[in-house]
View (spheres, rainbow, N blue to C red):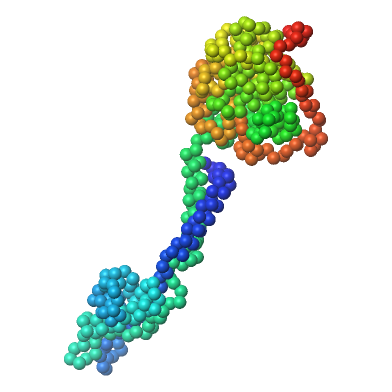
Length: 480
């Protein structure tokens, strides 16, 4: 993904990232409440080396250098069991020297004869007492065991406490601000990581580039998601100036530049799976094409789950299936709709063999006849991966694949394209369906653009009454 795509991903996932960051802060706060505070204090010793009485300057310099080296050497002794055990006995502590050693550090200051002994404890007073006791025990061990005096002389090396430990007033661990910051950073990282992981694992198509890459055909436009589609399936009739209606018209404009075989603008609209917006798109595209004054025939070839007649408020008892078995003639089942040049051919009764009927010579003859009388023939077909109907129909018409935005995987769309190409289908392009106004590559936020700028009024289609069969006069006019 590019930097822009990552930024878009973070913007879409801001709620998840915010929640995980807050959870990280809450977890850090809980940790601060539960964990026992630890206090650290230290005592400082000065290590000195005896140069003897009457020592000259050079000898004093050597003794000072020796003291510096001794401080480094004896730093390890200060935290040894030999010293710690004496401190434990002095304070009557109920722990072993090994356990105490985990809380004691002895460090020589670089280039000096200073030695710091630090002790960490949950009790600040006990930490100070322990540090001072270790300093005293170290001095005793140093003069009695390591560097004892000889023949009444002073010890060669000795230690002096120059800064005794005092009880600290604030804990050294955990420190609230770093812990809170760490919780926030960790929570944010988890949120960002989960968003990126979901993006990597999610192969659903969410952009024009992704759809074009999966289908390898031109992307002709987007059909916006309409939450009121169940109650107003004909968007261009109910809300002709909306952004969603303009999106349909953009698809129409793209279709007008498509080069159809032999100039016959006949195409099947199908999708990979069910409930992916193909029938909604077919109905509204047919309306948009009719708006330009073109003669348009909308054919419902979904003989299993027909929807076109219901969307247009037409009677669907007679239709395509009757025509294909020779029960009725074309003029008997075509139903004009509205004041424009749109004619609807319902599916008719559900037959026992839909695929066989749609692949029959009668279907090919029907398509040829419709092409002679109409500028556009729009065929609503079943999903290509569920039944063979769409693949069969591709013998007689080009194919327009509907791809629901963010709801179908790349694998599924690729499988649909393989199925269509396997039967030699002429796939003219794809359209994005169920696209939300804030998703995709083009935001649709300008609202009623035409109305705001005084565009020419678009006359809504007139209401029509159900007409299962046309009268004889209407049939004669249609055939003419």
